[in-house]
Image (cartoon, rainbow, N blue to C red; front, side, top):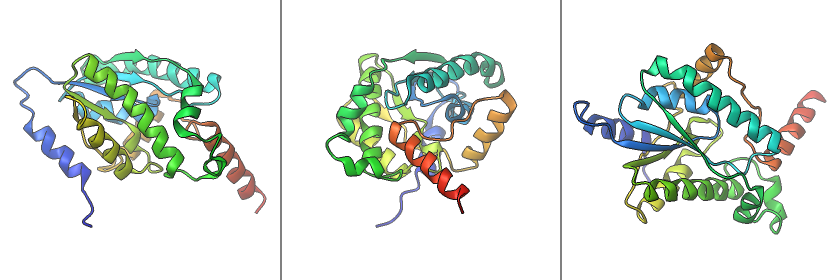
Amino acid sequence: MQKINYQKQLDEILKSINPQEKKPTLLLHACCGPCSSYVIEYLSSYFDITIFYYNPNIYPKKEYERRLNELEDFIPRFEPAVKNKVKIVVSTYEPKDFFEATNVLNEEELQQEAEKGIRCRRCYEFRMKRAYAYAAKNKFDWFCTTLSISPFKDSVMINEIGRELAEENSVRFLTSDFKKKGGFLRSLELSREYGLYRQDYCGCLYSKINTEKARLENQSK
């Protein structure tokens, strides 16, 4: 099977947008400020962006709140640089939704999985579903997620989920692989420039445990 170039597909979509016309609306699911930084910089000249913060996978609650506060503090400081307003919608924080969606309490083997496995796919999917439902209800033109900017995330998996959801809704899915074209490196630069907190694990309890375990193993070598 030929590998899909999601960045090329995104480039073609952006070329089709007429800058002389009213910007289409984009609901951008985001997990944190650092991952949002480059994506907003990249897309804000093409879309009227609304950030959708829905991440009940993040553990503990203190970490969830820290990432949210960082995002809410960052956006107003970043708007002058991108010369566009960016709105933020904060959804509910119910950790039980994560455990139910991933079924990790019943399938204990998923707790030990490295990133990009079944647990992660289920986590991506249930968060993207919630965001997509909001986008459809509020008549957004496009939907996307910042998740693909991470080198630890599977862009094929993310885009497959997005396309499947788009078949069920009127909102178009914006294919992407934001780590490409230096996107991830640019997010590091922006994080340094704006003094953003960058977490060292994806978000869920199991990614935290596995990250800490790997750190201890490396220290003992």
